[in-house]
Structures are given as structure tokens and as C-alpha cells.
Image (cartoon, rainbow, N blue to C red; front, side):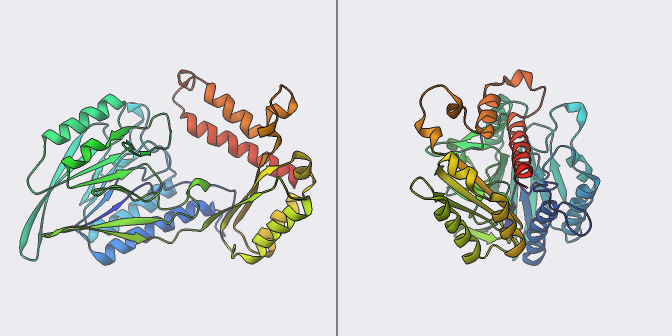
Length: 388
């Protein structure tokens, strides 16, 4: 028996104000292409089942175009008689019951199992391969209203183990010897002690491909959502259940590349810093890639002397970077201890400090992390506009 595990495809995600010839945000198209790669691989490799561990969509209310694309890809699996099970994640799960889940649209597609009602559910399946009958019970816990509800779901899953293989599908962070978390306020947490109760734990939510334990994996997101993921390989997981054990295969995807560079600047002149940036731009293949250069410990007066607009234009127009940005961390922010202008720091730092102090009760259902990211993006757009 062979199963494919993917997660965090975030269909509908858009960024960078870059558009294709049809006027669509290019990053939105990129995320669709990554999902299509996973579906195409499944159609070719013919697994017994596909498990999606949440955040199929980036938003609770994706556009009609995004929904149509997702349905089109999933119908391909349905027609090929490859079962597709998907649970809701924290991004595409509505905060209010009356809003309704977009995953409900998949309920009437044959061989598709959308799980979105905020409670533990299971599905029993049987597969006949090589003359053998194999039974599978898939335990699912979608995004829940609270950690308590999620914990109750875990206990129910353990008590409800079935014949044959038992697989748990969840969208949650993990806390054990190591911690795998995004820090979002609606994040659910699964203790590692539960892993031993299942033959495989299909995790979603953490965006890096990670083997948490021998039988528990995050496939990670199928595309890059932040520079924290830069240089990490994107993949899906193929699990083969054999009589002599379980084999895990990492199947790489080919998303748009994201590369992160750092330059320590405290002992460099303006000319030396510019020279290092231009060396990166000219010596590394940045064509059609998303690029960031971080200027660490740079003095404020030197940073203000750098023609950042010209460097960005050189990277994007002459060397073909899809998107290029320069970020900085001023040396004074570390060294200044008194009260004054230097202590205030950058706008981004001020915004991060402000939003961290806002009570979640005042957010009126809005996720703090999303509001923080939205504010940072607006600040970035304004600062880039000033440079232009």
C-alpha cells in the first residue's frame, strides 16, 4: 500500500505585486503550479490514497478562480479513483460556524473526503493489491475551536483504533524534545507522546519538511511563504507500507526559488558593502528567483548613503530577479542603551513591538500574526516606494 502525504499548499496566496500576462498575481499562479506538480506525481505513481494535512487554501474565502482550480485538480484524482482526504487548517477554517467551510464544496465529489467540522472523525478504507486485502483507518482532527477540543480528539482517536493500519492526520504544532511551531495565536499543539499510538502521523502546519519522529512527518508547504523557509527544499512524502516495515520517500517539488543572503557590515565602508551586493547579484544565478540581502550591523549613516533603488533595478532588470529586496539591521539598535531617537529603531521593529502588546480580545476575530504580516508588508511597500 502506498500513500502520498502533502500539506500547506495555500492556494490563493498572493504576494509582491507581480502579475502575469493575464493580470493574475504571479505568486498565486506559482502556488497553483506547485499543487499541480503534486497531483501530477500522484496520477503517475498511482498511490492508494492521498492525505492533505490542512491549509489547502490560504484564506477562508478564496476567489472563485482559486476554487475552480482546486476542484479541477481534485476531480482528476476522483476520475482516476485515487481517494483524496483533506482536513481544514488554521488558514482556511472559518472563525464563525455560520460562515461555512469552503471544503464543503468537495463533499459530493466521488473519492474525496473533506474533514472540516472541528471535531474528530475517521474513515475506514480497504485496498486490494497483489492479492492481499489491506485495511486502513484514517483518524482526522481538523482545526478545532480550542486546544481542549483538539486534545479530546486525540484521546478519541487512540480509543478508536481499527484493524490494519492506523494513520492520524492533524494540522498542529508539535512540542516534545524539539518544538515545531509557527507561533500563530490559533495554533494547536500535539505532544509527541501520542505518536507511538499510530502507524503514521501525517502532520501539517509547519512549513519545513521535517521528520519529527520515525513515524511522524511534516511535508512542509509546497511553495515558499517567507524568507524563513529560504533555501529549504520543498517536497511531498510517499509512504510505502510493506510487510517488512514502512518506507518513507521524499519527493522533491520545483517551486520558484527563494534565496537569502547576509552581509555583516560593521567593519565595511559603503563602497565595500555595495561591492559585496553587486558581487552577489552578478555571480549567483538570480534569474526568476526571489532574493533578499540582509545588511547586518550596518551604521545608519552608511545605509542612508546606499542607492538601494539602483541596486534593486539592477537585480530585477539586468539580472532577471523575480523579486529583490534589501533589509537591514542597524548597528545602533544594539549599541544604544539610553532613551532617544536611536532607541526607537526602525518602523518594522516599532510595529512588531506594538502588535505584540495588543490583546487578542481586541482583534475581533482577526489573527494577530496575519495583522502583523500585513502591517510589515505595508511598511515595506511604502519604504520601497520612497526609494523609487
